Image 1: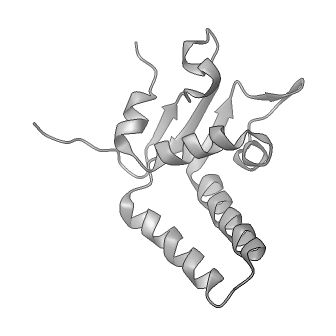
Image 2 (image 1 turned 120 degrees about the vertical axis):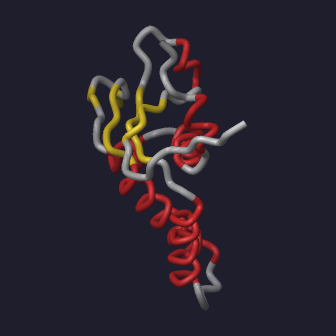
Image 3 (image 1 turned 135 degrees about the vertical axis):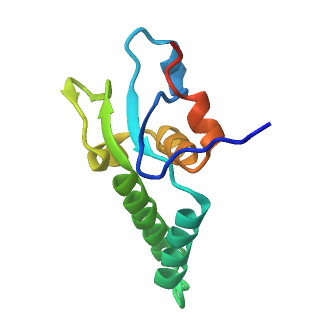
Length: 124
């Protein structure tokens, strides 16, 4: 059996499973790029460089979140079907800053896994 992955420049519409979203008639859809292992390693090296010599765990957590936000914003193109109150949110940065932790982490895991990304694509 062959393994087929995603081109790192292709935009894939991912439907998060979070909160029963995939079963919704009008689900939240996150348009994102697949992040291959080599790119994940680049983000890891960036984090290691920024945290080198930092002993304060609060500062390390802040730096980790900054690198995660960078990865998210660089690889999410658009969001649809996500609201904060009555305000429609479409920008990756605003989504990252307002969404539930589990939702953000699900999207990050999906962008790093071709299998999860495939599972979250809209089924016709």
